[in-house]
Image (cartoon, rainbow, N blue to C red; front, side, top):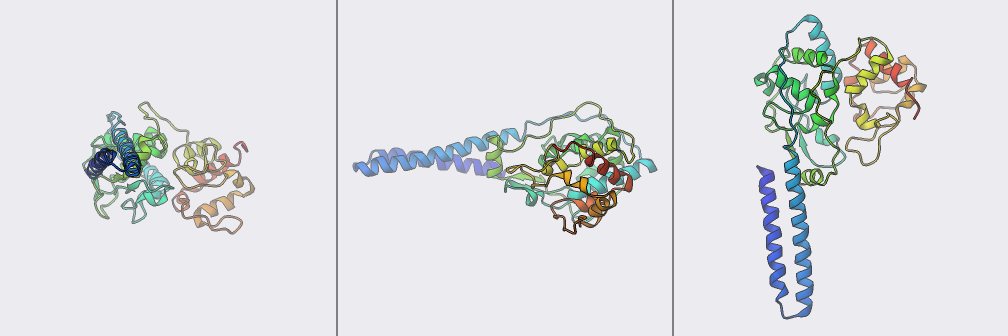
Length: 316
């Protein structure tokens, strides 16, 4: 609603400025006629351009769609354990700043541009998920669309959708069993501002990850490079460290991360300690923008799998 009011205000400003340009054009003084008409006309065109891009951005916000899969999740001890592991090592990076999966953290503070507010949802039964079906939660994780069919901006930008079907079901089983805590999630949780809508309309924001409707599988869990590659397929390392993990690129939406080839100079013990303490093998503090606290909650096999992949990937 706020965006609509802002859009209407922009259109009104553009119209008033255009009317002022026409009025000034009829002035008898040549300087006022040309200068005033040019100034008001230019400002009117600028306001109209912003309003147009904002309109396109608002349209883009409603384009994403995906069907709700027919999913019924049953809980087993194995699924709950796997779901907890993924929730701790992945979901917790955004959703556990105020408590275990209680949400409330505005992810906008991590972005390079002030494009709005994007509050991580409360995933406990105190949040909206208690009213969602298993299929609706599955769709939110896989494709970044909520139960009402709205685009979950940040969820569509991250790579959680590449979790295997079985792992997403394990996450659903686990969060269904997390005790209620925290405060309700704002509705809507995503509020893109004028700058964000204009950048979206102008194609200046990164595209959302493609919608996935087919089956996704994963390799067997173990301390292998293959499993490490799978973990990094759904973790968001590439959003900061670049698609090839060789370092972020200036202008990207996420914070700039270093070239991860540096891990080749670390031991497995040093890498695991860095992820669990936030201090790298050279004694340097790892930035708090790096979610090492959640990554460090992975078990030994998972951290070794990541290490094996990073130390065997091509240098460029």
